[in-house]
Length: 110
Image (cartoon, rainbow, N blue to C red):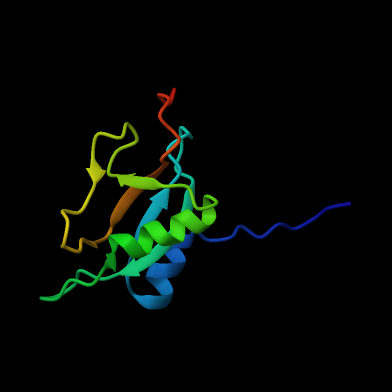
């Protein structure tokens, strides 16, 4: 029996093609390849920059991770921790961020 499998396009390709926007990608840091947990559309074309607030992204990730406290990093090694000073809001723009639950303090082997 032969089965014809359709290759599904990558999520970031769908966001770009459908909305004309580049994605903010939240990835799982524990894999040697990119595994996206969730994506948000953003736009940096022209004079305006559109993105998503850090707290909104963290809230969405906490839902996926059973409400564990967590942080985002721009690197798999946790060195690029994204944090906001008290009383300010950080607008995330197009990039790949890695999601680290608060209880995840062991080094990740690659």
